Image (cartoon, rainbow, N blue to C red; front, side, top):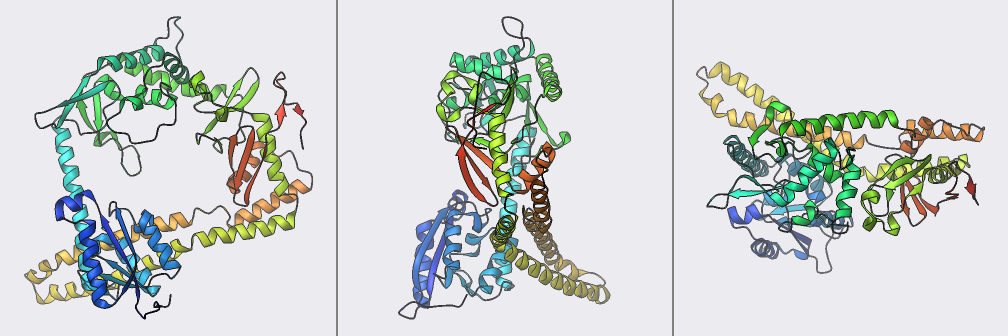
Amino acid sequence: MQVSENGNGHKRAVLYARVSTDDQADKGYSLPSQLDAMRKYAERLGFSVVSELTEDISGAIPISERPEGKKLAAMLKARQADVIIAYCVDRLYRDNVELLIAVRMWLRAGVEVHTCDIGRIEDENNIILLIKGWQGSDERAKIRERCMRGKRAKAQAGKLIACRPPYGYAYVRDDKSQVITLFIDEPTARIVRLIYRWYVYGDENGRTLPVYAIAKRLSELGVPTPGELQTSRRVYQRTRPSGVWNEYTVFAILTEEAYAGTWHYNETIRATRQVRPQDEHIRIAVPAIVDRETWEHAQAQRKRNKALARRNAKRDYLLRGRIKCSCERSMCGRTNRGRSHYVCTSYHVGKSERKPHRSNARMEAIDADVWGEIEELFSDLDRLWVDLIRAQQEELDAQEPKRAELEAVEANIAETERKAAVLGRTLATLAETDPEGVVAKSMQPEVDRTNALHRGQVKRRDEITAQLGKRHLTDDAIAEIMQYARDVREGIQNADLHAKWRMLERLDVQVTIKEGRYYLKCVLGETEGEITKIDKRLKSAIVLGASR
């Protein structure tokens, strides 16, 4: 990008201010104070301020993923600004690796980068920038480490970490309003016991109920759901009617060990939700709502039901994992009395949930409709080839920012390795001239910073490489799609289910159902149509008035 100026000859500057709750409490930062300092800075250098972007968000989130950060990127791409001004370095990033990547990319694009504490940054390897960036990254790591250490110590002392209490419980707090443990909330605990009794021992007729049947019964009884009772902290927008239970809520209750008297801390990795090894869990005793034997029986029953479901599967559904209801919930396949349907996962929970836009779709009809659209794509090989190449280029264009970031990361890695080599030679020389190692010891912090920076850069490079590898239309994928299209043209119409699954995966097909119509989206574009009608009285797939 060539630096351009506005009509009066001044460079156009965009001010970027960021704040978070911790920043305001710990440092006294505020958005007005940052903006005031940046305006004075811009005025002193003769810049013309064209935009002021402010947001309240964590510095751990990459600037490219922040709402105002996206606006900043769009302005720079459209060449609507020549200069970025931030109050200080850690307002841009708290992560040193991300900071150096972003600064390098901005500078290479011809954008000036300024901060009120450093001034103009003309090189991403500026020593002051490196130090400031390291301080921000180090501070973030220390804050997180102190926070996690405090939480672990509290958990190891047998005290709960503040979180939303499991359904059936409420908090016990000390005189400072700090959470200590849980106590049983009897009105909701009775519902928990009822769920376990239905699942393990059966209903009034002695028939054990599966998860979806329990959700349906609770909905019919109008029992308030856990989400409805959390009036103090709404963390999501509820879409289901009042008193309508979801089977996933029931499943979560049946798998929560707190109901048997053991609450787990450090059970999952927060960022990825992956379960940690058992020896890393911190177990805290809490009052039990159900006895341990009943809870163990529920886990064994859950495993038996899962295995039974696999053995009893009567259908392989073409659109498995690729079809959604218009309410944004996934649809799952169900077979009943010889007829198979795709059903919204909220459909079965009660009559009050059955709204028109959540009606089901006959499997034979929608599968045929969707596959018919795919075969239509294969009907003109020349057009298909052109569309695939176009879609491949669009996919590559969408990845261009990531490739530019990868290039910047690799350049930073090379620079860090060059500095590490110089540092290594210096230490080797000191080992010969400084037997006591006094000077070498004083350089140890620099060695640690260099090693940490290199590890972070390599990790980021691997993450970006993995993201770039998630392409649908590689050359091999296009060749496979074209070969399949030729086979279809030559009369191989009856492809097996696995071959069809493969094509849907290659084309990244996603289907949405709404009021008797389907909306198909794939890498080649979007289309829609009316779902074919099938005689509901017949078990076999006799199509009435089919267009194909």
